[in-house]
Amino acid sequence: MSLGDLVVRKSYGGDVTFRVEDIQRDKAIIKGTEFRLLADSPVNDLVRVPADQISGKTQQAHIKAGESLNLLQRARQQQAARSQAALIGEWSDPVESTYFEMPGKVLHLDGDPGYLRKCLSLYEQLRVPAEGHHVHESAMADTLYRLLPRIRPDIVVITGHDGVLKQPQPYDLYSLKSYKNSQNFVAAIQVARQYERHLDSLTIVAGACQSHFEALLRAGANFASSPGRILIHALDPVYVAAKAAFTSIRETVNMGDLFHQTISGSRGVGGIETRGSYRIGLPKLENLSTLKVTPSAI
Image 1 (tube, rainbow, N blue to C red):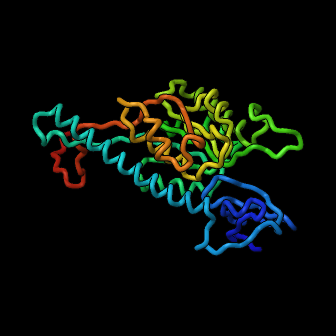
Image 2 (cartoon, helix red, strand yellow):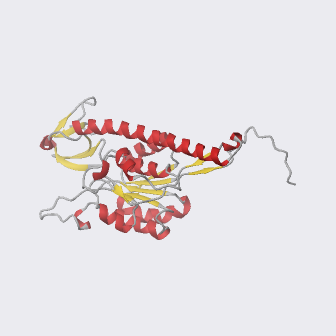
Image 3 (spheres, rainbow, N blue to C red):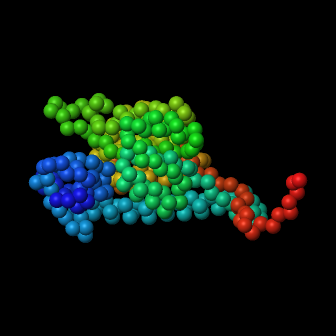
């Protein structure tokens, strides 16, 4: 067993594919390749798998991720078509109906650098303006306090690793003490809400695998994981943020679409009625490199 090996756990029936992050004597630290899951496992419970042989659950996530991307891109095209139609109705001259788009700007804090890279790549692919920072979950509240006034995002994503803790006593799903990082996410949400209390002026997407969904919403999140305390896909927070970024400010984010366009669905993510952050502007922006201007200032 070596660092970087792809493995599955025998005791779990090989349901999820992991990558070996660290080995400490007879125990390995493993991270899900698709799901936001960081775990430890006895080395003798792990089985190496080739890169082209992924587990059933991971393969299903791959397929669903492709479907989710297609749905989001289709929704993005439909939003552009609706905007164009609205402008044609408002302007008698079709030439004047050209416009520019302003999707919501995202600030993404992630407790995992590998997942952050994947997320930023997807934001770029979806043409969502985004700035990302790798921040340990315990430092997210302080980091938001510093970054929010400077970046002034429309959407904040607070994610990383979480999960229900293994305990000798029966766990209490109502208690934040039963979760690895939900209390840190709650603290970060509270800082964001102190910065902007209006739920439609700053959209907050928070949580990771098995996070305390109800506590995150009570703290002020618009969308959160995980209602069913399940493992969420690494990219689910991006799909939620992108949906909010390309939903018009005249509309609320369609929750039914959200459940279909995320990989984990309604057991993985949920939220409250929230207006989108997408705006259009007129007229279409000029190409300043070709614009002929006669200087007038002294």
